Length: 278
Image 1 (cartoon, rainbow, N blue to C red):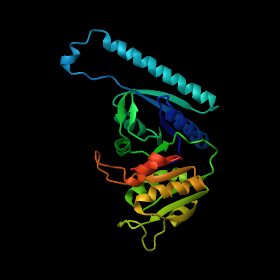
Image 2: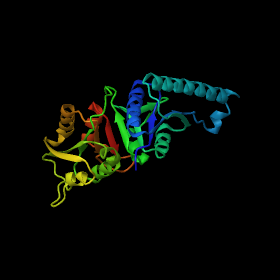
Image 3: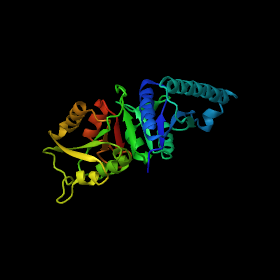
Image 4: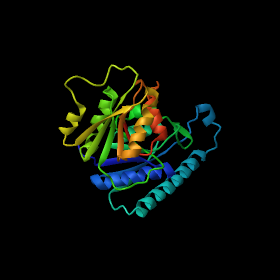
């Protein structure tokens, strides 16, 4: 299925602006629509507290929320205009708990794009846990670094591959992007860390990719397990691919620790867009 419908979490701050800029570049390549999602929240009070709130306060709060959302939409449309984008764009306002609302909304789109995080995301002072978001969303998520300088695509991608189910899911979800690239680097790491996944006799991930019509080159990174994330980013800094594709390595149970040390290191230090799936 072609990429035709992108969702960007947008509140007007610097990370959101950068993710929108990258989303518009993707949309230009794939002739896709871009929708900016702004989430508002209303406080929930139990019946005892609600009785103490003066009449009209809630309606006033809702009006203030609407005015704030209108300001964010104005900033969104001004940024689109400044970037000279002429394609199909939309602005969507949803009310609810930020993490759940973002995940539920993203299920109606091909890819969700977010600004970079080094701590739980915050929406109207409510925390959005990226690990729980990824576990809920059911769609690939692209994290766009704030330091990224958006440039024309080189049509090169990198994949962090360890043979796990998480990596396989990420590869499958990213195929609609990877099939448009001229070159793909498949990054594997040789370390002392023991694993029951990885190489299998008679099966080659590069052959799989070539059967999808893309040139793939396997790259063996030499690193101790605790330094694999750093080795992946060093390679990406040298080659400068358009995107790094990887699975959210770690425990899968919602509420448990989803991101492993490799994923967490990359998301705290990356200088290129990272496409994640779980």
